[in-house]
Structure formats: structure tokens, C-alpha cells
Image (cartoon, rainbow, N blue to C red; front, side, top):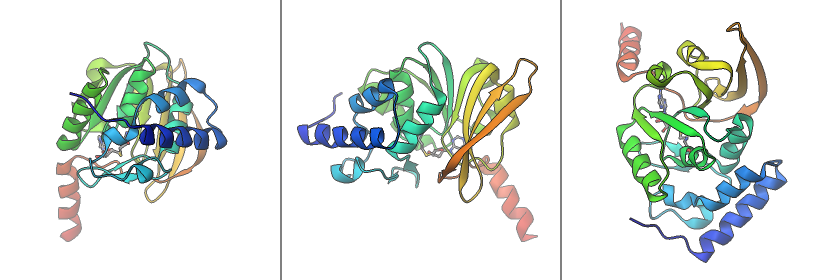
Length: 226
Ligand code: SAH
């Protein structure tokens, strides 16, 4: 298994990195891994390279999107993952953010509710020999079997702060979560030793929604109709 990364791709990626720097991404570790991991490999084969490396969200499979390069860089900067830390990601998508976290040396667990994307992401990570545990499931429930996590990163727009994720966050752990329905407020949460949390809001973003289990969605529709 292999992938194609041409001089053209590399040049476009360099420019992407320069734009990220200009927008305040100042962590060289993050800039380096985003330069090393070719974003286009995570997208459909016919995706136009010039578009892939622009600061845009991009359609992937199952009606979902890959996050903007800036959003990925900014969330990673806030999360500040360290080597060996256990990180739980909610919303694997095509696995681009997952690959960035794994390449930074974190022990990554990532949950995705679309089976097709869970499988695509597994394939993408295998291309780079990166290991991460990719789970098909519901992010609202987290992954209690491997808790606690030092860091939790939510990459879809959460309607509220899911209690289960707070429960699975380690003491002194940090969570980055965009909260809101139409647009989201990027929120950083730290869990104190007594279990209480501190919240900081750091700007507006736009994510695809974090959806409840399919069963729940059907139930909601059913109740609305009656
Ligand atoms: N981390 C990805 C972001 C993909 S978009 C990247 O690097 O680009 C967000 C993803 O969250 C979508 O694939 C969507 O299917 C997924 N998602 C939405 N609700 C979810 C839930 N309840 N549990 C797990 N994944 C969810």
C-alpha cells in the first residue's frame, strides 16, 4: 500500500503551513507534522490539490467533511498533546486529525458514528504506519473501557457538554469541544482534582453536528410528528 505525494502537493502544503503560521499557529511540532502528513491522501482521489490545501472544509464520504487545516491546527494547539498521553477523539471522519495526533506521539482512541468513515480512516492511517484505536460507535458515550483520558478532542459540533466525556476525563485533564447548534463556541475545559471543571471560550467556529444515536434521532422525529 502506498500513496502519491508529488512536488506540487508538497509545494501547496508548504504554502498551507505558511498561512497557518501567519494566522498564529506558533507550535513548530504541529506545523511539522502537518507538513509531513499529506492532507490530500485523506480525500477522494479526484479532489483537486489546489482546493485540498486551501483553508476550507472539504466534502468526504457519508455527507461529512474534513475540518479546515486552520481548525485542525488550532484545536491541536489548544489540546497540546504530549508523547504517550491518552487522547480520545470524537468524530474520526477521514482520520486526518487522528493521524496528526498519532504522529505527535499521543496514544489515540477515536470514535466515529459512520461505519464507512471508520473503515476509510483505518485504511488512511495504515498508509502512514500510524497506530490509533478507531472505534465505530457513539461519541456521546465516550469509550469508558480505556478511560481516563488526559485529553479529549471533539471534532463535531456538540449541542451541549456530554456528561460521559467529563466523567472519562482524567484529573487535570483537558478537553477541547466546540459547543453550539448552528455555530459553535470553541470551549476548553479543565477538570480539577475535586472533579469540578473550569471552562474557557476561545472563539466561534462551524462544524458538522455531533449527532445522537440513530435510534434517538428516530425517536425525536416520531415524537415531533405525533
Ligand atoms: N476529525 C475529522 C473531523 C470530521 S467531521 C477531521 O480530521 O477532519 C466530524 C465527524 O464527526 C463526522 O465524520 C461525523 O460523522 C462524526 N460524528 C458526528 N456525530 C458523532 C457522534 N455522536 N459520535 C461519533 N462521531 C460523530
